[in-house]
Image (cartoon, rainbow, N blue to C red; front, side):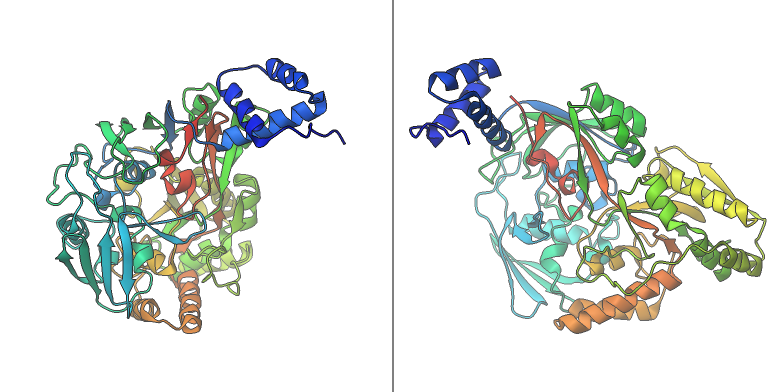
Length: 536
């Protein structure tokens, strides 16, 4: 084994890193190392070690451009109304939350200094002192009270209203302390406060043509449906980061166009790459893939309150018609885990492993379609690039339907306006749900009778009661048992078919560093801009 000279030290490694930053070539560095008595093979090792260390060391400065997969003229800077990935990215850049989830899924403090409770029902939030909004205003308790109470105002139209309604009292104790009292105990409150909708805005804010937050970036340009431009916040309270001088965020709905923009260097991050496009990245040294499996899924939704979903046998037939393995392997190229028609993913500690996925069984599907009286009837399925991989999934289901005499027509609609005009509206349509950290959040948003995103209009008084019971239980064994039963109820009774939990693949430039997995989804749970940096 070739050894370094005994006088070679870590300071010399640092010197090599410094010379790399200054633009020294590999030949120049090896020449310097050999002059110091380092053999060529060992010199290569030193260069590799220094280059690796350099890549892991944040570099200040530079700009980047990133592209999401959907946007519309309804894009918003109001955290309460955020519903698209583009909204989440911008909210994470311009605002801050009381808490956030780290890559291990653990709650960390952000604007809150501490969050304490004795009974999981009455909570006290102590804020960090000296935090400044972008306009120079100092964060105080009134800002937190105003931000949280907005979710309770029906006129605001908050997407987190059903979660916030459990907060029966939100009051100021002193300038830096807020008291939150819940309708019933909920040990998940610190996790709930880490969701994107619970960003803190300045007291009295009603104009969201721009963003006045405490986040890592200041909003310089916001054009709904087009782009946003963010510049570094010089007064950011965390003391480190962001590293970028600025970044621009746009949307490129067409998957191939998004990948080509990455390959050409026009963007440095292409979010949510379709698995079909993975081969376009292979063998390209200028790009790489960042893979996260956190519970994201694209699902087929059948509204139970209208035809054809009002016929239980049609819904049952569709569940047997969906070939999960074909979707996993052919559509998603293996970048997914088989789903069992409920939203709690295998990585979640409350996932029910005993709930087997519905087997693909065309004959059972035909039986139920015949029983429903709809066999041979043309049934539209609405799909769009806006709901990742939904068009390919729809084609798989359509082909399976044709083989048993079921006439399923794929209606491909534009991404622009999909979430406001088709999702939640059409009788049979696809959705795309971002990861959420707890079963209570998933059920509250998607399956409770009053859930704002109740995709199949599932309603069960017993389910609602169980949700409240589990939320307030401090007995983990009991809580787990309730969540397992609730997952069975959703899988068997709701009109949502979840064939797989999809691995999110973000394509990134090899010049971009710092991107890590996060339980809230791809692009580091949409908060990537604060943490990434570009090669100098």
